[in-house]
Amino acid sequence: MAVESSFSQLLDGPGLGLAWGAPFLGLLLTIALAQTLWPAGWSRHYGKLTGLWAAAAALPIMGVFGTAGLAALEKLLLLEYLPFVVSIAALYIIAGGIHIRSRMSGHPGENAILLALGTVTGGIIGTPGATLLFLPVLLKANRWRRHKAHSLLFLILLICNIGGGLSPMGPPLLIGYLRGVSFLWTVRMMLAPTLFVSALLIGLYLAIDSVLLYPREDSRARAQHKEVHNTLGLDGRANLPLLAAAIVLQIVCGMWQSPAGLSLAGAVISLAGIVRLLGLGLLAWLSLVLTPHHIRSENRFDWGPIVEVGVVFAGIFISILPLLAILEAGMQGALGGLIRVVTGADGQPINSAYFAATGILSGFLDNAPTFLLFFNAAGGDPVPLMGAKATTLVAISAGAAFWGGLTYVGNAPNLMVRSIAEQQRVAMPTFLAYMVWAAAALLPVFAVTGWLFFM
Image (cartoon, rainbow, N blue to C red; front, side):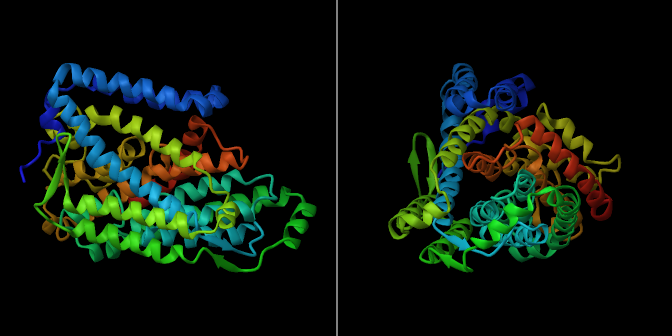
């Protein structure tokens, strides 16, 4: 099978200026401003607005680079976006068919335990699946409360993002695994920083909820909620083996190296990639067939959130393409200054800078290419990166996995939580308000983490 050209080769990454990122910046600003100033309009017209910015990116790419630009777009959509959206959708469907019945009352301590369990589960089954398992439980437990949006915000920080640092079950740490980083090495080395960050955030949540918010809730509503508690149990058990099969499929296909593949629209989809797509599609279909309708009703399952995620991230993937080409160009690209920032005068890596730079880019760009950029900047050889440069690789891994909670678009489950919550009439912060709030919660924690683990 022929070696495919990279985005940098197809679009002349070293020659691209940062102006090519204008459509991506425009899309981010549109999401932010529309959600802030025109929320009802955004919910009705997000597809049109996203499509305009996607076209503003795609048309110049094809106009300037011709067939090479078209090939880059096809490669991005077939090899990057399609596996991403199929994986997210399959886990959404399967996890949406599992309903956890609990006696949780919305008490701060119980919510904190739920967030902790969800964070650990995110490292086992991946953050999208864990999010969809624990989000309905948290929503139902806190349905009676006036102050509940903050619990969902901490769910985004912890379950949607931080939990992904516990293992290479999904991007971005899966990239390192595919590049030769040991699965168990990642689990062992990422355990301490992941647990440390999780503990600080859960402690912060307990302080905010216990001291500031829970005492202000209506005691009568609390008593009524306790009277209608469900018994403890689990519905939709048929989805458990489907969920396990999806996890195994992801791992096996990630390890599977085969020269066979299918050439489609100029992009070569590997045999492992084909099996992964078809397998996830089959598992999702089985979940829809085997799950009784009332279980999905209990979870308030709706297609709207996953459709919004699919549409918005299609625009993000298309508009981010020139920036990916620039990132792949490394030191020769317009963002080469970032690589100089993380390297000292003696040529040695500055680990705290790797943590911050990888994290900030991951909060606004796709975390998988960001991980790969700094992985390559640190040498790209897994042997020394798991040995003498182990701290550098942990800094890159933590930055890519932890910082996605900075914005709603930093990670796909973030946007999904916001969409599901708003469909259940939970008033969530706008894009800008969320970013300010997340920065206030995360940056002090990350400053301590960087000083403790990476200085």
